Length: 138
Ligand code: NI
Image 1: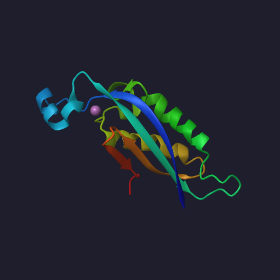
Image 2: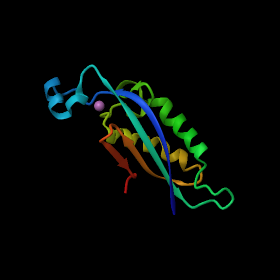
Image 3: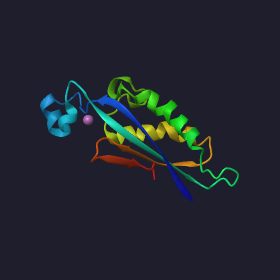
Image 4: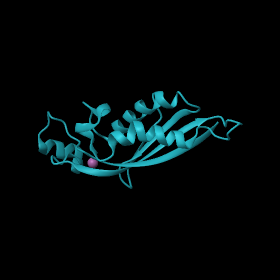
């Protein structure tokens, strides 16, 4: 078993809040990310695929193909967008790094399953100091 990772990035706006909380309560729970006027992050995304090396190509998955899959299904939907308002797979969800990573997994998993290799991990860095990793439902 070998693991291969493709890095991509996108810039997007979000707000962490619950409509049933006041702005003060949202600030208490969600901190600066609750700013009612939105704010952005430079997200870094690491998509890891695992599998066996194809002896004919030496690849687990063609990284060019993986890059194209991520661009089409993730980056074009998220880059320079408002995650709360504009991203179809995030509608009705809190736009936390955790939920974004799960949403990205759910978009990518069935597409990667059509190719060589298996999606192993979606790692999403929201800031230099904070990142989440999702390995699917275990
Ligand atoms: Ni934020």
